Image (cartoon, rainbow, N blue to C red):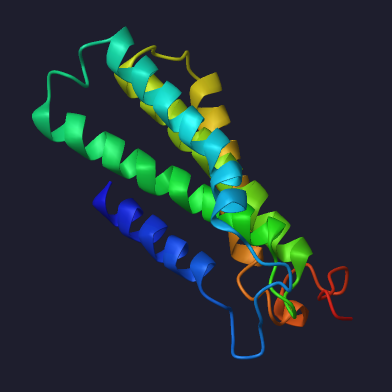
Length: 169
């Protein structure tokens, strides 16, 4: 879980900074209120998931380490998803909104995958093979979408090329 946490932290950092020197913030000022409005559904889902996980079973409450680590990891996961969606909604000039949308969808699928794992482990055991199929499909598709969006400033390097363009093209 620690390595995945580090990966989410690095994605949060990457999704917060310009992709290269030519990228510029959107001309419309991204106010704190607009960012908070966009973050509200993510925060609500995070809180709801924690309430469900902690109330349905004592598996999470019985372990001090897990009762601390799981909420911290979950917050990093939801924050990375929010940053990907935020970056798509407020795409920098010179970057491809199509690739940011792919990253946002990818992170949403990744959140679904990790949520299925958490609910299976800590509350309601899902039946096999549907659990493995659902987890792996959402995980692999999520990772694929995140990885093809790796270079939003140069979409010609993407697996999506030639169907993607930058905002200024």
